[in-house]
Image 1 (cartoon, helix red, strand yellow):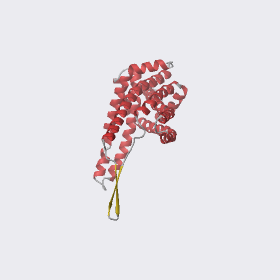
Image 2 (cartoon, rainbow, N blue to C red):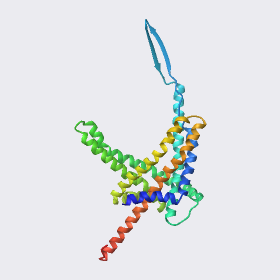
Image 3 (spheres, helix red, strand yellow):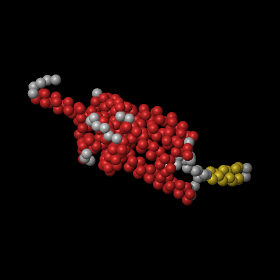
Image 4 (cartoon, rainbow, N blue to C red):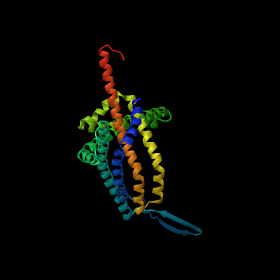
Length: 296
């Protein structure tokens, strides 16, 4: 029940403390014009057509050879993507800390202003950035190892078909665990004030393995649900607003839904972290009562 309780508590936390969504909305509104400027939605494409006639036969050849201009556009696109990724990672780290700090403060009965949360995020974003990078690498390793049976099954088909199904099941299971690990790492860091505390997530998750797997699945459900709401708007804006000022309009129209996604993921981690804390406290109370010979 811990995973379900945390999932439900996530939405109530967001509704009770709308400041958390405002923080994420500020981030999304900042990133919208930056993305529109640095990442073009469409690239010019030209192709050459050559027509030859041999007797009564007409041969047409089409091609799009890569020339210096095309390579320059590709390099420009890669530079834009790299710049956007760097900016978005830094800004996301700042606002993730602010949202998590705001949620934890609210649960502790404390009031924090938007300015205080943003300043706190600026001060601590290097820690958030480092933790997220490390956990991303850990996730790649875990999922890569879990994917090995699938590779073995593909190489040994048709006998290896069973390995593919086993590998898929293991990969999904591991991915759910990794999702929960990543979700509570930043709340641990913010709450304890130490980067090392973020890695206590392993102990907490594996002590509550079933709840952690369930929470990972529920987080996916939440992300997919939000994506299903925003996808039609994203499709329409990307289709009809693809260049010039339209790209900026498209980015701003999608910003509120991106903000909702950010808020959900970050607040969900706080809710699950607090749920694990509550579970551990209850276990300690049960152990103390058992030592006194009192059965609950």
